[in-house]
Image (tube, rainbow, N blue to C red; front, side, top):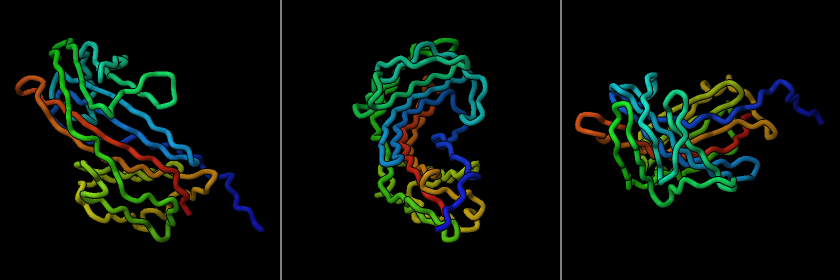
Length: 234
């Protein structure tokens, strides 16, 4: 029996969680749940990150982050980076605190450098994707994901990311998009990913809202649940 040569197959890196892009905001606060299923092992993580700007900015391209003093989510102090971005990530099973997202999300901003102190408690339910995940994708056949009010529960939109080797396909759909297709012609040049070196399929349910820190200073709040699964690509 011939054994397939996998020596030239690149190991696929897990894709980053895709975030909604919004124009004209003075900041963005992200609360993210991550569920990973890899080799039969499930890992759950919770991520918090926040950025603040001194002028209306695009969340994808903002480069002048502004300090907002100490930033807390659910009474947990976020780490302030050298670029004035804030973040905290925890995983169940590790000896550090959980971000307690199952009990809600409450942001407390102490304020600094023109950013006023404020508190924002967001009662919206975390969105979640409840549809099917293909475990095998055949490049010559493509595949389909169904996005509707049942599969995209409490979501405004859904990101779908397929990564194999160095190639990544990212799609963003409204939560009522219906059946969306990944056609053979866009998959044909993706790397083959066998069981030992699989690719990754990530489906992220997302909901966002914009509120004013003070009148005329809109800030973006986002909740997401990212589900990441390994996938064999033939």
